Image 1 (tube, rainbow, N blue to C red):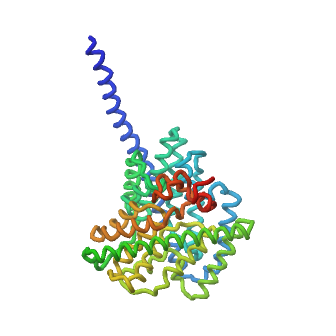
Image 2: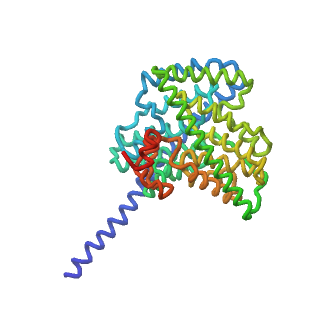
Image 3: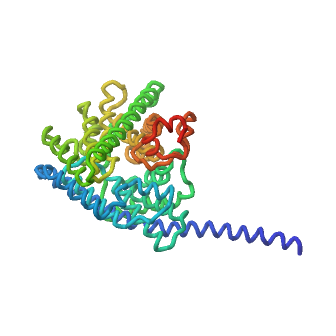
Length: 442
């Protein structure tokens, strides 16, 4: 009897443990399926609208003169009806790190309208910010519907972010890792593996089921590995990392000037839009506004002007710094690809390979998501360039330091032991108190 009494709890514990794993898996496959289908459908709608806005603008260039008015209208929309949503992506990251009030579903239509307006009237912005906010706001509604606990709410938000990223770029593996990697620098939350990957894969499948495609990229030549070429990749990675810091710093600097000089928020995108519109008209080209996909495609096969990346930095920093809606990622792809193209003037690697390395590495340094960017490079360009892409992304990630485009990112593990005092702080804290945090003081 005594032996029986001791074995029973162990068997019961094993039974419940096995079934809890089954329950967890089934539960999150079902929730992730719902998130994936809804977010993938929303991404399909967004991409169709974005494609229409881009083609209309390029066919009616005069519409760029209305960018200041568009900025004012969108600014008023957020100021009077969506103040709590102005933090955008940072609001999502804050709620993953420190769960609070459920994100309003109106974030999705607000950011969709704001981003389409930015692209239609000639701003320089991307699409990842919109996809993440659509995904996060849709996913967070399940917190209320199913009464999810704070721990489960974190997982559903990660699933929404992964679904948005994976579906809008057609890179489900990168989307899954991005959802796990973006909110906490230096650490990955493995408990969210099933929600992140299931939602990203299903969202990508849903977007494709709506017959919405993605851009296909091709590298003409990938050089064989050698010691000298690896060293060249390291040098390029350092430059890509420095470029990501330049982009983030300039964007935050312009944003701080607008906030300091213009007290009424809707006037900020209005004045910023006027500057961007005048610059476009002055240059006589729309090359540096919108997504810039044609220039990105050119960078893999054609030697471009070496200043392309710098002009895109300026136009995007002005657009986003003035509080227009959109994302940073596709402009970062443009910046990285054209910078890689420019580096081919003096770095002896194939032009297309350097463009591909820059495409993902500048983003890796700016978003602090090196693993997601390595996977993205492999998904977009093929496994042949994987080692070069990995070197560039890793070096850019370390070279960018504790800086980035998402101020609400928490530092879970510092990039270097010398900066271990930064752990537990977010990037916005480090920007606002650089001297104090550099010495570990508060």
